[in-house]
Amino acid sequence: MNEQIVARHWVALAAPKVAPAVATSTVLILGRIWNANGAEHSLGNAALMTVLATGAATAGAFATAGRGGGDGVLAATAFATSGGLALAGVAGYADGLSLPLLLWVLATAVAYGIAVRYWRTDRRDTVAYERQTTVRREDHAHIERMEMLRTRTQIEVARESVAYADALADALTARATLPGFDPQALTRAGLPELHTPNQ
Image 1: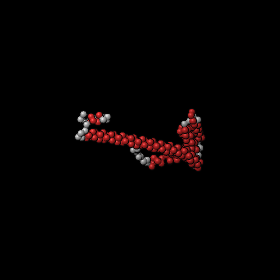
Image 2: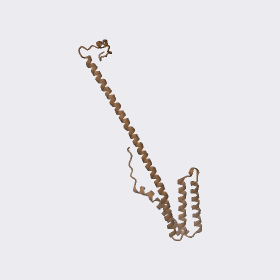
Image 3: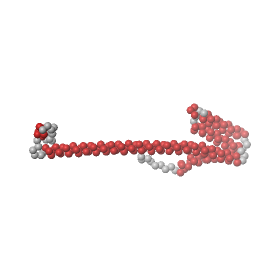
Image 4: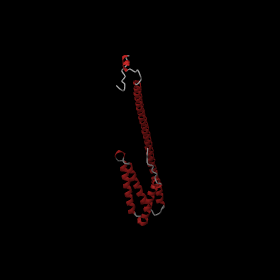
């Protein structure tokens, strides 16, 4: 019931939304820096990036086809690495900027397409968790209210019993002090014997 309210900073809220664009932009920038430092039209560098991208894609395929349906996070990471290496290889090898930019737009769109799917799943899980928490709180609050009512009822019954016992004791005491009261006459009449407080 007494939960701490934490307001997240706007940077923490915006970081996941800009992460795919930042990642693909970083790969493009590094590829262009690599291009400016001698990777343009270098077959050795292109072959290296092709081998690395193919290796990452193969690792993603093995992760997907693994036991029990595979590991989705590992497969997504491997395929993202493969795509990033391919983008870096094209950005480093190509002499113009149009092909790297086209691939950057395509890679960013694919990254956001994949990210949106995970964001939806995460949001669905968060909403389901909040619903379950609310239901649990309501159940516990109902149990607490019922226990409180039961306890109050028991206390009231105990108070009434004490008050009744006090009133009965007072009545017996008052009756014993009345002039002409004879408890033996009641017993002889067939009534149960009443014990007076002074007996």
